[in-house]
Amino acid sequence: MQPKVTLSNSRPFEEATDALVLFVPEKGAFEAFSSVNTQAKNALSKLIQEERFKAKVGECLTYHSSGIAAARRIILAGVGKKEECTPEAIRRAASSAANVARNASCRRISYTLPSGVPFKTDQAVEAVVSGALLGTYRFLKFKTRDEDQEQEKKIENIVVLTAANAGSKNAIDRARMFADAACFARDLVNEPANALNPAVLEEKERQAAREAGLEIKVIQADELKKMGAGAILGVGIGSITPPRLIILNYRPKKKTSRKIALVGKGITFDSGGLSLKPAKSMETMKCDMAGAAAVLSTMRMLPYLKPNAQVMGILRAAENMPSGTAIRPGDVLTAMNGKTIEVLNTDAEGRLVLADGLSWAEKNGATEIIDLATLTGACIIGLGPYIAGIMGNDAGLLQKVTSAGNAVGETFWELPIPEDYRQMLKSDIADIKNVATTGEAGAIQGAMFLSNFVDKAKWVHLDIAGPAWSDKGFHYVSKNATGFGVRTLLQHLSRV
Image (cartoon, rainbow, N blue to C red; front, side, top):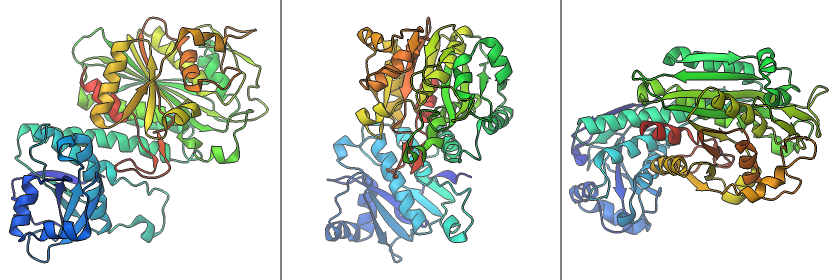
């Protein structure tokens, strides 16, 4: 359950709280810091000097007020250079301060806001609240010991010291919505594969649809076979849990011709199939459904976000396992759009399930398609753990999605899909092959493959293989599942 978030007109020095957060730039000072520092007879500036506090983004320093302020402790949270202060810097600083407060068993944390920055107050409020909520996320479902659950270390109240006007209230609602969606996706991805297979994912979809009032349709394996969805069936045939296609539908009250499809890769566990992964590489493969988790988490928020477009959430749920029934390297599959695929590597399965998802979106009249997938290790090698690859066929849509990501602190880097590379996927016996025989341009190869299943719609492909999972926490980015992509989708749809 999220902490309660409220607004207050209290002066910082008079705010009775467990922890008062003052944002601090590398040089100069914000108004809130100056006022509290003056009341404290310059104790804060002396502490900064003594501790050689640099005020780098996310760096924190705690001052125990000992009665000189109403707050029990004051947390100084660095935001970097004042002239370069952005909502993202505030988001990161707020997250770091929240973790300091929680680790000190604070239940109430109060935030001041920076002054003289080049963005609006409601943007600062949203950044503070989202940073605090995202940064204090924990996945404790399978913890049984009290000392691991740390019940006493839980923030219950977040207070932002600013006027309670409509803009600030809306900013809080938006921050809570975005954070709740991202944390819901984190929960899904953090579930172990023995607790979340395609059948369980279907049940979670049904529950979300009931709660949000969304339409839902589930197409099981027998019907998929009749529809000619041989790509996803080929991937899931080695598992005892059959694959399925799950579609959620959001319809706005106003009639609109705009029909957006969100397509998520939902491989609940990826062993690599007969092209078996090394044991070490399988340890985090419950993460291979992060794209589907992002789509589901986004869809459940649309009745509250209310975009002016019909939105289809298309989840391709399957498990890629080796068995006597699994597809083999060299097998040929026929996708829903009739194209034949020579499978050279069964570990390149994500593009196969997405092929049928994209075909379904086109068949059902999508005018815009955004797919999300933990698709290629090549994208991680090229862009690292914090940046996702973005590719597509429409410059305008690419720019809009990238801009939405920048607004919420999720970074994308555009890669090309050059026609000269199409020959890499040319097959001798089928229309295309699922991987090239060379290891070159792996992320681009993946997008090039997917482009064969998009005809008329504007299309963007997000390769989130790197930022969907984090081996260590990074500011408000949680360790393990991160929920990457959810806030970008919500930001993009809020602009529709």
